[in-house]
Image (cartoon, rainbow, N blue to C red):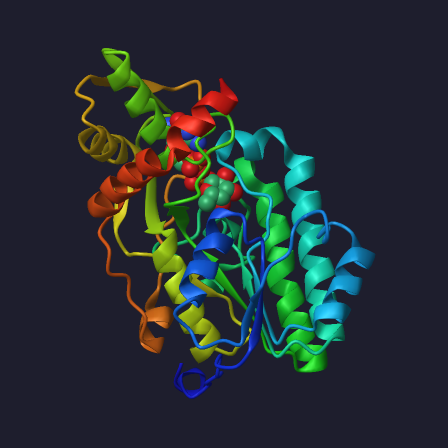
Length: 327
Ligand code: GFB
């Protein structure tokens, strides 16, 4: 990584476009950018910029000519949403990436950071998963559609770097959580789902909480504000074709995660494991030695992060609002 270490990009005075600023990742990036001396943070409404439409993206990019693009716009969801909406996950993600990356090249964007996911790696990749594992084996079937689209995004960045010399990089965050998450049980990832289930079970004085699958799969969970900090760090310090993993190094089983959530929420009933629901990939521990070599490390621990997230969701009404919407 020594050549990579010397690659510095100065964010100060730059006009930075956050694509997907209303999502969990995009909004965290906007919060984090407030600490940087950028000239302007550009965001746009869906009504004025349709990321699925090439001419809308071309026109907007030409009118606004950002210096930097942080590509956090994506169609995302948990294991159930991924398995039941394959067309939406592959189509929307491919269109967003292709439109934005091509337009970014056309208007001379100086730096673009594409956000992928650690689900791009083969289901049975050796653990911890190194970036070199990309495209070395079959994908996890529950999210292969999303994964293929995200792999295409990485390849787009590599292709524009190779053919045009564009400084486009990609990062692969592990499972994320934090403010702005989706608490709809049909679409959400596991952590907000468990927070909601524990909250409702406690309120109803229930004896049990249902956890999907066997509880045995292992995952890492990164707080979205820590991801945003890492993304700004790599924007300033990394320039290479290889994607970069961003994770915590702290692995937890889904069963233990449920126990942490119950403790944070104060639910004291039993866990019941529903084996009719999929486990998904058995383990995805990301090797972050390249990120560490650059100088970024995760600080927050998972139990603290869960307690903060639950308290924040109660305070903002995020948890109760989405319960009302999805009821
Ligand atoms: O977070 P999650 O939906 O997605 O599920 P993945 C992680 C694990 O938690 C699986 C279990 O083993 C689920 O079966 N789980 C237990 C639950 N209870 C629940 C629950 O109530 N809701 C949910 N959603 N899960 C996603 C991919 O995979 O990871 C995406 O589908 C994306 O493409 C994302 O990459 C980061 O970790 O399995």
